[in-house]
Image (cartoon, rainbow, N blue to C red; front, side):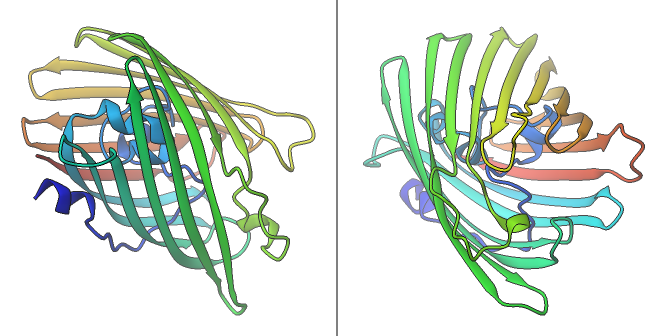
Length: 283
């Protein structure tokens, strides 16, 4: 059953603003997580995180809201991750259907995303590959093949550092610029003090169409306030996208069933917010 969970196919109606895909946990933490995140959504942030997850799990996801006027986002998704002894490589697989009105062109599409990783004592190395097809309204389909490579070094159980190079391939010149998934570099730090506090800080830069080398700074704080309750806060300062976003969330952390909620709000006076929720089953 655990191997079958890894090969679970996923169907959803979703939007992907920019890969890596950020689920409710990362959304509640300001978008952070490349150096430390649990669950299937970790493979979108950094494929090297997969070996740090123990066991296997499936993840159901929903997201809805407005980032800005005319930028509506809605998402349905499922994910699967497996890091058990009877698999050749720890890995995750996703299938996502996308819908997005906030990238300059109203577009729907399909995303296949596969990740594998391996652990070498304190260091883990991961690789992901994806196929993204956008169907632009009143136009045609545009296909992108790409992927990412990442590494995580756990200095000890409560402290880790990470680096990810995302979208390593050159986007096709026929893909409209608003729909291109461009190369990005992300570095992150993860630190925890028991269950009282887990802190994450990520620094990210888009490499193309960014002549001023603007950066995105992301910070997240997570605290397990009781045996089954987790509170999350975060902030994202993105010069390139001109975003100043506050985030918050709450999670139910049962032994097998886990439920997370997140909200994202742009402080630049933009009306509306993004709301996310997921349901995870751990095996």
